[in-house]
Length: 54
Image (cartoon, rainbow, N blue to C red; front, top):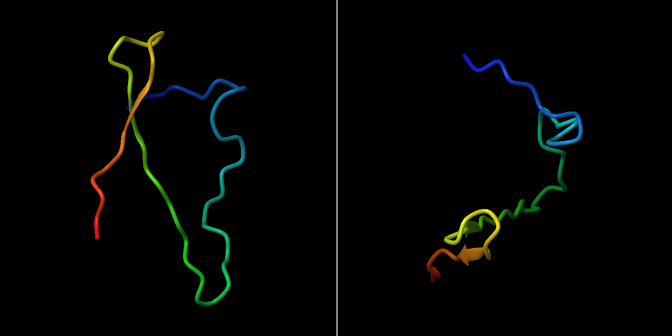
């Protein structure tokens, strides 16, 4: 088991245990981006978008 702790200035400080309430009929929208660094950590970032769906 990994026993590491978060650095005090990094990461979520007070994360919610459950999602916030929403109005009836509302929709929660999320997005995902895949970011690559082919030249290493100091190189440029490349975002790989998922294929479009119809």
